[in-house]
Length: 69
Image (cartoon, rainbow, N blue to C red; front, side, top):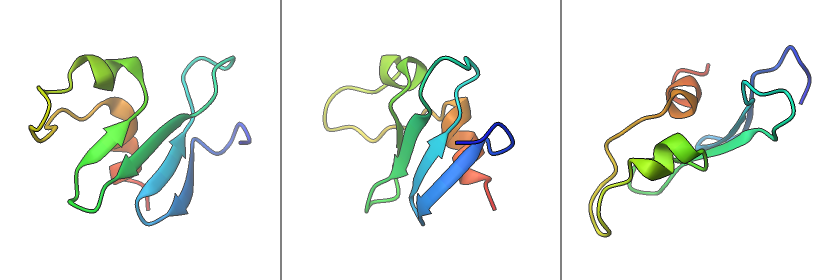
């Protein structure tokens, strides 16, 4: 990922979003077949609802991917 590219789209629902820490790997962001967004950043995981419930929280990486054109 180059410095000028904050987001790389792999397909319609899969993205790699650059971390604000230059030493970290990009965050993996994806949308499942039900339209739910997920991110592998700690902020998102700490706010996941109980098992079986739909995630409603959107971290900054999900917001960036969702708004990516």
